[in-house]
Amino acid sequence: MDIKYKNDKFQFIYRTSDIIYNSDKSRILLFYGDDRDYYMLPGGKVQELEQSKNAIKREIKEELGYDNLEYNLIGVSEEILEDKGLNVHQITLIYESLYNGEISDESFKSIETDWINFKWIKISELKRYKIHPKNIDVMLNNEEKIKHIIDDRINVE
Image (cartoon, rainbow, N blue to C red; front, side):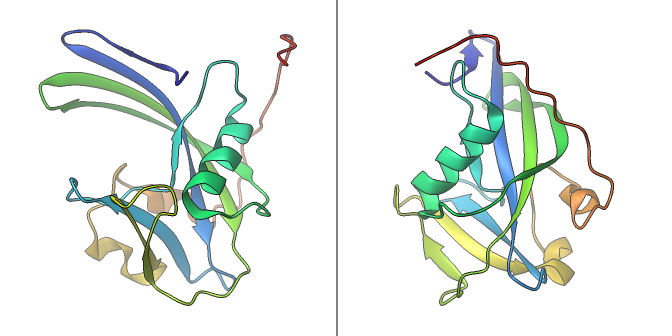
């Protein structure tokens, strides 16, 4: 079950996302839904008792089929906004990875669902796009890494 909570006026979402670079780090992969007018980093909601690193591995595998990426935690995004009459508080752990495979299409559909569209975008052209969350460019090629502590006391089979 995804970690999210919703009532009549409020929603909390815990998600994870990934800045996926192409092999020379000149592009990143973003997505947009058919119902959205902005781009986002690939990823999704963390499930109950799931470590965020396992969540991003699962989401990227489900949406893109990539299963050989190495993920490094680089930041946290805390977003408080209004969406469709709801106050939304979203916490996102942001990872980065490098895709060394061949890029045959700059734009393509998710393998999981047909309403998710992916696009490789040149980092030099990011300012031309409406991206959520704002200012993800501050995390691009950031040499300062944050610490990631895992306290996994619950043994879940």
